[in-house]
Amino acid sequence: MDYPPFIRYYLRNSTPLLWEKLKTAIPELGEWTITSSSDFLYKESYEFSDLPGSETGHQRVKYALEHSEVILECHDPSLLSPSSLFTDDKALTSSFVDDLLALLSVARGTMVHFVLREYSNGSNTINWSAISPFPDDIGISVIGSTKVPQFVGEALKMICDRNRLPASGLYTAIPWHGIALRTVGREPTVFTLALYWVCLEALANARNETGKKHRMALRLLQSLGMTGEDWDNLQELVKDWYEVRNFAFHEGRQPEWPISKFILRLKQIRQVTAIAICHLLVPYGPEELSALAAQVLNVP
Image (cartoon, rainbow, N blue to C red; front, top):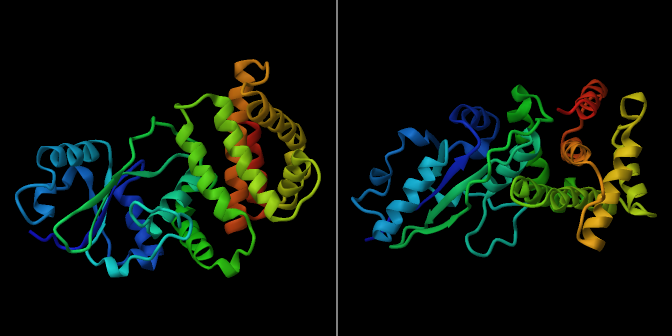
């Protein structure tokens, strides 16, 4: 039997309300339907009484529904814009939805991702790819909740037009930021912090900064407006992050720091990296940067 063409995402760490707001800000979502996972009738969605793969198929979808909040789907794959960030996805072509998830993750400070992604081009098979749910991790948003839809909409336009972001480093930094978020709670803290540092290096290298890497990163951040009394501890932060980077890459271990300092520096680089990425996509105003500086300084 042939299945109707469709692509479907089972999404974790978001809400139907958020996606409804995104839909109003992003024209590409116009033909997509948004359903709460708790209301989704998966057997009816395939227009037949069973899933491909028999019991395995049932278990896969039931698991995805249990670990997601939103079902996002489109029944006209011809409307599916390709991904601008994940161009090396060979198993199943990523779409602009994957870009949206990456941008949401940066803005909200927590991993917004699909647990299951299904695709059929109208044949008798359904292709799927899955990602295990990540540990619940509530990060600190660097974009106000009411501004997230507008930010994501504007940022998506930016990354879809490479002529507007020449050699910015964002096409490297945003995916690496997602990789760093995925390691929270799964990998040693030193590894996670080092991955965030890679994001800063990518952004600095793209701006042709020269010299020692920690100075390159510092100049990058200062060029984005992280200067003055609000950011007077930035040099110390960058120095500490660079120390962790060197221990991680060259010695495979972390510095002899108190664990409290380590956790604090991880939270701070996580925020500063997200601020840098967001600012390069949709610049903050001076007052917003000042408020974010206080947020970084007083991170819980």
